[in-house]
Image (cartoon, rainbow, N blue to C red; front, side, top):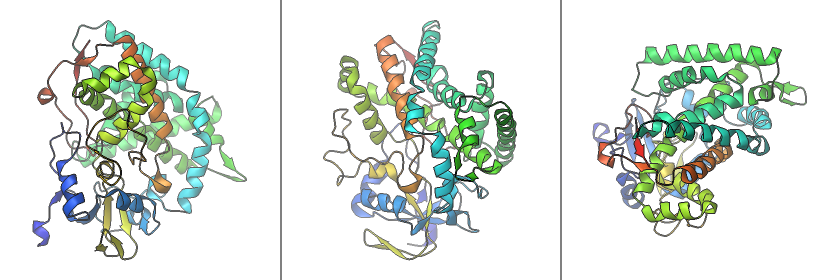
Length: 397
């Protein structure tokens, strides 16, 4: 196959589908295909669970090398030497260790009362509005934006502005490079001022803990603080908002599973894990570069090649579980890769799980009849992003 005949990635899969049909075919017939990238250049895709897990965890696959000149990536951006997700060990290890000291499971769990209050307030506001209500604007987007902004200590009045900047900076083709650059400069200037405020007036929030985090005589530098605060803001926003909105459509198509969640709130944590496994939110996890020739499912990947791990394909690998295309909230826990893996496993996984569980606990208790007010074919989806998310989702109850 000539280079011009290679399939184009990301695939043009209808956004309303929870799975990409192409992935099952890849896993069966062509598990490590070479593709052209929409942004230019070529890459290999890893579609099987064991291959994806290896790409995410084996040091032979480098994240730092994706910043080298001429490397094919999904979303060309300038290299940021201070950003955790752009680094390999040991540089990554040092920064992540310091950030993780401020972002512990215990500190996240302490947020539960605040998350519960935000969920209550958002549902209260929904109940005052005429139906149908846009679930995306009224609940799915505000919840993670308010939670993560609250965590870093940003004033509530600034949340709308932060959301607007994040929507632009997370774009692939939805906004121009100039718009993305301007939004990035604005959000970084804002965060720089916020860090200065927290340093002068420490508070009980994540940003203050990041400023104070030390490992012997080491601590986060100013650029490290700035870029990784931005990372936590963006990573904690779009994917959680996307899953909240998309999950309502999935549950509407599986009424027996929704009924089981309503009947037993204790089933909600398991349901959240199944949603994370089953519902595709992103095109692929962060690219890697093979630093030496490596073999995946019998395919030799040359040194210097870009490799994209298809984690939502891995989550439906028949080798991982029986009947992987069935949505089953009672499924025995499997090691899904929705949060990635290896040293770059999502630092905010516990926060996302907390938000999703509290959200469904509140929604199913307060609005037990909650359901989409339109058919799936009437839902408009966002374009030009690496994430899959409805523009709006009218709901009633």
